Length: 426
Image 1 (cartoon, rainbow, N blue to C red):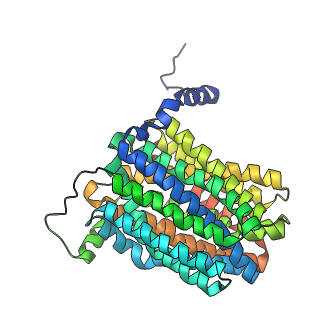
Image 2: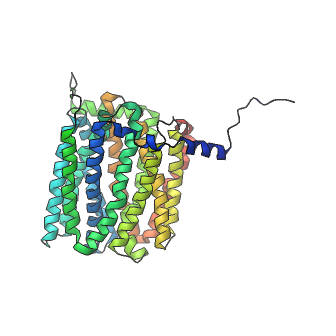
Image 3: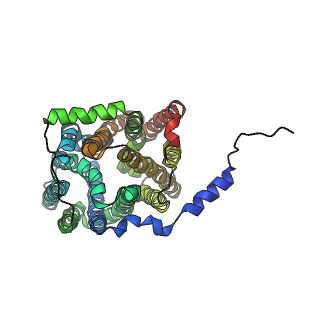
């Protein structure tokens, strides 16, 4: 009898059982062994909770004022416009100045803008254009905050725990996503949107205090400074020449532009499609956050695992399928379950893309590479908000969501067949 020398892969049930065995509660919170990261985690958790209250209340308030889904897209566009103007420059800044100092400045700016919106709302003076202007201001602060925040992770933890720290960052973000919108919906209904904006303003104090208390290694500036343009070109050339970084960032862009754009329509979906109100809107956003939190904790509990490429590939294919399914459902409990599943697969994409890009990034270019990553994520988001708002106005919300999900799925399939090395990344 002739023996086969081909190595047979274990059956799916065995692989699934092996994955479950790898889950470790101890590994889930490995990054919290670092004192600086503990400060960051709790300060950011409080701040993000407030931010999601403001995002939820702001979207529903402008929909109440205008009754237009296109305006929802416009708010998203205006908030993201500063990304196009400032974020790539901000990446150069993040490689030149102490990142902690830069983060304290951006958090203080967001605090001030939240209190201004709260004051206008309490004074019954708020108009749609006020919300647009302040959303633009928040976008400017975020453009400088995002690349510094992404690159700051490796100042708080060692490289071997970077993936865990990024997963816990996602868990923190999505804990706030899970609770913030639901609390905002109830607060909005009982007390009005002004209190949502006030709570957000107060919440920024927590992360400013956390940053001030950290004990970090001294910042050492580059010995020889190039011009801003030269530094920017150096980062751009590196990304353009590195096939994996390029593919991963393109994946982030496609998912953000087409797949994730559906989130912009939640206030209109809650009212027009599901016949609900501000509380329904909060529950929809929270369900997505619950799913993302579960996904982030799953990644964190795997520890220092070596199959990030396969898990990323699964997320890119599963996420658009759940988005398309969501578009056909008209029953709130089932909608919430599908959004939980969409949130889980969505966080697999963005968490693992972030981790893989950072793994391929040399320290001296990290701020600039993460600014390009953040530019694609935050910069394309307003374009996604703009097109899906216009499509919903013309074709209806369900049709717009189906279009976006379908294009995202086609892109994922194209990457699956054209870049097989991606799913083999450790």
